[in-house]
Image 1 (cartoon, rainbow, N blue to C red):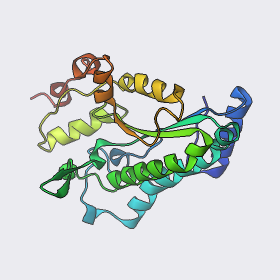
Image 2: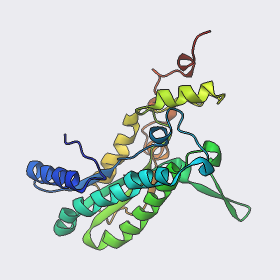
Image 3: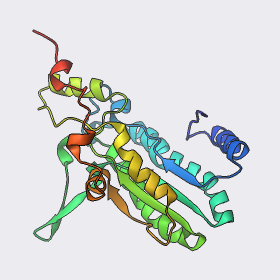
Image 4: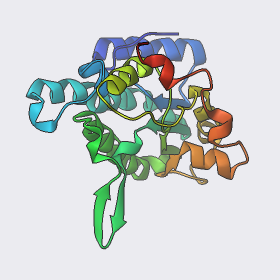
Length: 229
């Protein structure tokens, strides 16, 4: 394993060279590096757009958009040269919009997660356009939405939100629920699917891999996060 700061060109180059040395090339790139809202505004990860500073947006976009773009530019080169490869980008369901009565509305604009959601929306759009640009090289680019997943900092974030009066949600999924879809996208050819955005849980259900009842993290409890009286 190589640790790498995606905002640092020298570290990206070092990671790229390490990959070439170990594997002789690059066939798969999963863009999962991100600064999350709870990283910028700990522990709850919530603030209003008007309360943010320019530096907040610059830091978040520096990692979630420009940093990942730097990685793509570097690691896609062996794929283009060999005319095969797969790129998978990870975004958030908070970027989704739905048409109602002829107008689009956001899925959950009350989550107060700017500038995080803006960066994820930008990266999704970048990925859609990139997919069309590189399909002639037999390189596929797809996007996945993991959904409500227990990752690093999840417990601390939700404890702060519960203390602030938020209602408990459904149990989060274990991170492993994304593995089947990522493996599928990593192994398929561009002629099969590219330029698509997948809901991980819906894909799992459609392919007989179970839904929330299978992938929920049953070791997690919202009640356990609250201080005992």
